[in-house]
Length: 243
Image (cartoon, rainbow, N blue to C red; front, side, top):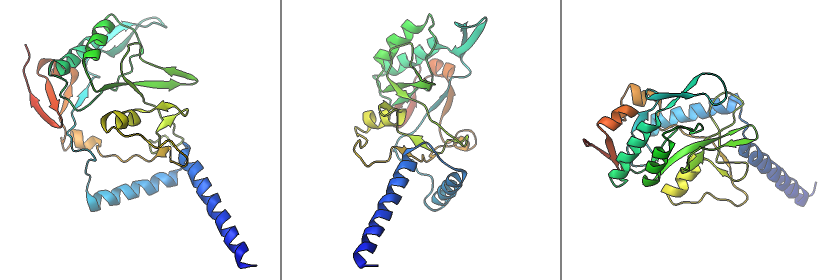
């Protein structure tokens, strides 16, 4: 075979391999083998380089599951439990009253049911900057909050029942929460030109033992924050008492 044909065949093979890799990476598909390799890589990285955060900021975790309120089920008989929005509004008020000195607040609460406290929560949410709430995809429908608040899409697809691969955008235009944070906090735009990888394998900087065993990060309940709030100022936290 002539030398020029070998070069052409090698080029075609390389183009096919790159196209196949790009399509698989940009899809939601992942296998058990991929997860095993990634797990081993993460373990080796942590042993060699340690588990260092990408951002020089402290994190405060607030549990909302202990502060709930019953509201009538709008679909069926009975009541359902949701996060107490009056307490959530009180917490946002504390952030706003302290001149929004927090670096960012991510409220992982889907506001999908209307309540009598929505007006109060909406008012305090408008006063509070750098906060985001999630919205979801359910089938062909997009489930957005019933209150006008800043949002980011919290949604992923998995075929292994593990969270090992994440699409940065969904349906070509719906920005996920990490992308919204990247654009608003870091003032960066994710590449939107071909070729680019739309799906990423996330790295877990913070894990459960960091909260409950090592107690590396402060951990509170929502109701506690309204009594003796913790104000986060660009990675430095201090307690203040409000009457």
